Image 1 (cartoon, rainbow, N blue to C red):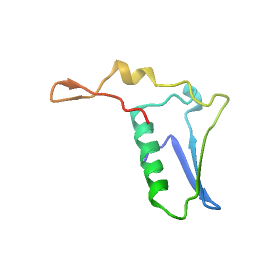
Image 2: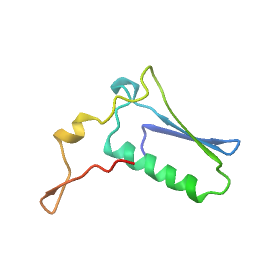
Image 3: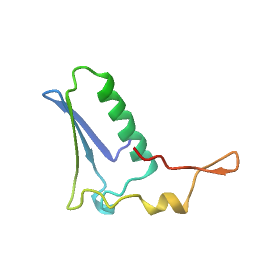
Image 4: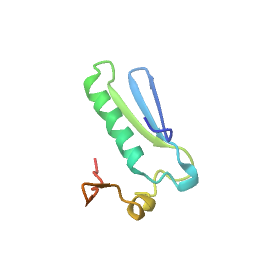
Length: 85
């Protein structure tokens, strides 16, 4: 799980808080993966009835972290593809 995603469950609500206010909560690969993991969790856990997605700071999210595009991960010589959920 990403250190930039705060996860809590209360009253059957899974709260996911993006926590990168210094970067306007820009989403990077690690954060996308953590969000996807938690959304899958919410789909499989019958005790979770709702998901609340929020962010710390004054911006919900600036979008993709451009640093991910500057430093692509390569597997077998092929540039990585960022999956959007």
